Amino acid sequence: MLSTMQDVPLTVTRILHHGMTIHGKSQVTTWTGEPEPHRRTFAEIGARATQLANALRDELGVDGDQRIATLMWNNAEHVEAYLAIPSMGAVLHTLNLRLPPEQLAWIVNHADDKAVIVNGSLLPLLVPLLPHLPSIEHIVVAGPGDRSALAGVTPRVHEYEELIAGRPTTFDWPELDERQAAAMCYTSGTTGDPKGVVYSHRSIYLHSMQVNMTESMGLTDKDTTLVVVPQFHVNAWGLPHATFMSGVNMLMPDRFLQPAPLADMIERERPTHAAAVPTIWQGLLAEVTANPRDLTSMANVTIGGAACPPSLMEAYDKLGVRLCHAWGMTETSPLGTMAHPPAGLSDEEQWPYRVTQGRFPAGVEARLVGPGGEHLPWDGESAGELEVRGPWIAAAYYGGSDGDHLRPEDKFSEDGWLKTGDVGVISADGFLTLTDRAKDVIKSGGEWISSVELENALMAHPDVAEAAVVAVPDEKWGERPLATVVLKEGAADVDYEALKAFLAESGIAKWQLPERWSVIPAVPKTSVGKFDKKVIRKQYAEGELDVTQL
Ligand code: ADP
Image (cartoon, rainbow, N blue to C red):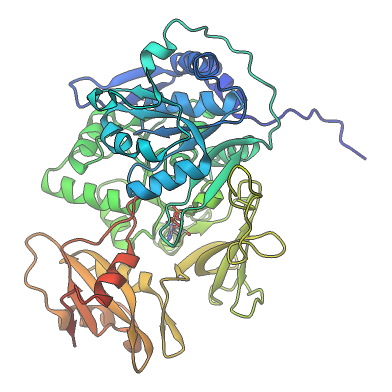
């Protein structure tokens, strides 16, 4: 028997309409570096998004599922593009402005982008690429920045403000199939070539509802969220859509992502929530330790994208800021878990839950798979590869405009689950603890050593700012850990024996203690601010590191 319920498609168009009417007074505040930030209400954003849709249709000829790229910081215009492009039936393609130029060009060509909306300050990145981007017919420039480099380029150039000015604030939005493509995002390629994940209207809608649940970010129109995680990094973790659904005010840092301006904007605008990867929180901590600022408005922070060292959580606890750990991937929209401890526990009892990656929401099913393909129990001990499925989890990668979608065997199981490439354990009550990425695990004499566990222990040392541990070849054991450490400013000269003893005291088994050590000036980072262990392994292989063997 079929249900008797209405079948209303879950679309971004509905999120846009809801936000601009019911939450019309909520605001997007964009940092400008000027004395005053720029403020725009959701009603204004909605009206301008509608004007943008009219402009894209009438001036740029967007009439179907063409891909429209954005090369932009987090700001109000980027939110407008987020809402306008999918709502008119086209596909928003956010470009990662930190990728190497060749990769960026590869991605634009693979997605066959018709136009790009770009921030003026990013033209020096875009313009030299244009000869390699034959599909780009239009460039729309928004925000400050020198335009002179655009003289003589082949695509038609439009000024964002001029393009939308005077256009109608109504649009005949098409009734879309909720399974249609709304947005796409290429994985940042920490491990291999970028792969295109294509989100549907339905997946975005359902993911946004999950982001808004109290067991996830739980924000309302009384909140302001500081969206540090870039809009090109898995849709800023879904925040621009989720906020439009529930009227949460957004504070957008634009290009001011350095620790000092971030601290200034927090002190001045008093956001109640923020979202960013651990590197950002490390940098901000160093900044406010040197030049104290009041961060206490941010009661609640979502941290993810890479493992959060427990020492970082402790440091922020002392500042009155509670970091809540979340796990996810480009392929998971990204919300996969969040580490809110179960009810009824004291602070002390909550701690072991807070340092896990967190608990799965109802929309994300999980299983652990052992090396022989067997399913492992949720006992907090059996370690295996995490596989997930659910309505906002990818089932394939984009195969290009004339190819079928791709389902590589190493990424998707035969029965359709996503193989995450992350290794960990799950407790009986559904809390995930990741021990490593499958590619980063150190396989020493048939046993596994978790690089993350060593890093977390090292980063708890008072002289260590950052630490990255990678596997290096070893004649006797196959692989052994190499510990690279970044010392805090003003720290005493490094004493590797003392660091090793510190690891032993913090509970690392003797056979897991690294014998190879190196002090490095900074841990190399990927385009989204994660530790780039590929680079360290290469530096080691090419003899570029000054390694001490104990
Ligand atoms: P990339 O794979 O290119 O780094 P993603 O942003 O999709 O791009 O990264 C997803 C990966 O990031 C996950 O598979 C996992 O390894 C890692 N990750 C994300 N959140 C966490 C977390 N809280 N703890 C540990 N690792 C995490």
